Length: 249
Image (tube, rainbow, N blue to C red; front, side, top):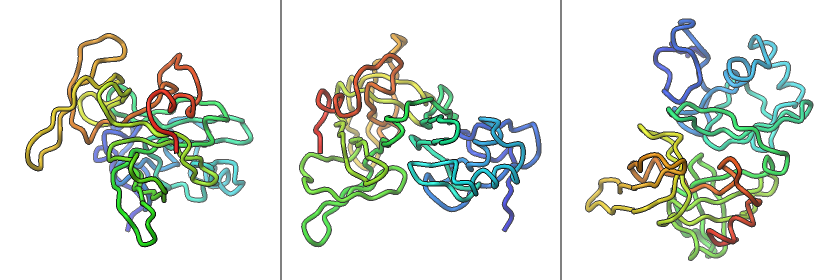
């Protein structure tokens, strides 16, 4: 199977110029589904830290590029929403976040913020032994003791080293959220109303724009609860924000 695909066919979230060349690198197996962007594209096309696949592979062989706290070994590893990239030699850290338009972009963060990652809860089930297993948007699973406080569409902040949940943000009216897909991808605001739709259709969410622009609506699947640190000028660390807007683990 080819390791390349036509640029015109890549997902809208990929930060590539579609008409610059015919082909680009295909993402390998891993998290984030079809929206996952190959690490090579981030290193070469977005950051300009490598001019070729060979240079990217050399950097990865030095264990100098970390994804969510783990050295990356494959230039085709998918990178997606809320992943944390760390470049130890450069002392640079980035969070993957959608820009307005839905393309994935990199937001600089400090070393402390780079030690943990936000995840949206997309599944929850009891397992033998009484623990609760949470499934996050990127396919990760977590075991938690207190299942009562966690619900679908909530968000948690997880430490990369030991997968400890250090903050919990509840999906509810008044929560700070961002849209990660659809026509309003990249916009941030507070939930004004969750409109429950009968049947199997997705609920609609009306959101007050953080910048004071017109309110907007999107479907529940596209909404992720975030903390104040995602907003320029937001104050406090993840755990402090959780005390205001959710329940700590």
